[in-house]
Length: 284
Image (cartoon, rainbow, N blue to C red; front, side):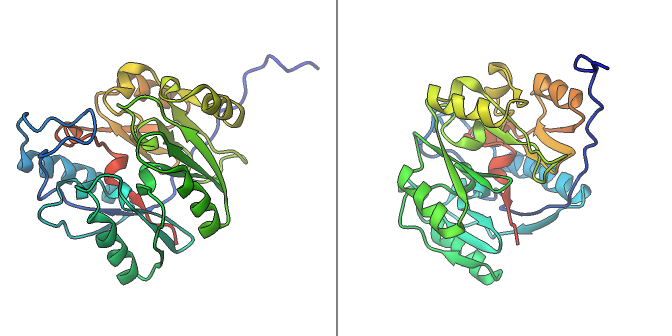
């Protein structure tokens, strides 16, 4: 019997508890400009940023995730974007070496926390901004470059972790980190596969070819949802915490069997960050 045109059975999504690191935005403000989102002349509200961040924190706790905190440091307003602080796999933490001087003190601060938490720390020699440009999908590391992270760091990551590293080039300054243009939807394999969502226009032609070949079933997010950092989201395999205003992406996720949960991080968006920027995976 020919069943090629028959509908496929739905995939059963399962949440897996995650362990993450976050940083309260007690010192958040926009006092310099290092990405297109930032405008030092525009007012920011630190109390509002803390309140919005607290909702994200409470959401993770409510989902059963183990949330660790690093103490914020006065004078480092972007420290809230914990994802940039490193890349952690198999109990080993590869530290961050930031491009801009304004953020460079964050690297040692996060590496000190990793050491105190019992992780084996690999001090970087090459410019990289942690999980901002390094995303784990299965055994493969998707590694972004183009604005912040050096391609030389991709080779360093491959040596440190002994994993395949796939380089992807970003071409739109508004999507300056990989985690603003790609969302990893399946932290654990589902029926032998793991999927992502991404914004096509954020990548060069060669990178798009790689993404289309590796992830033929990926969710392609539109410009409107990407423009509010809708792809800067965090998934446990079933629950996907996203920007509340990314309604198109929300619909796409529901159609694929995920449970999107919208949160409002509009104040932190003024610094160019969203859900994933505030969330660093701690993989033992």
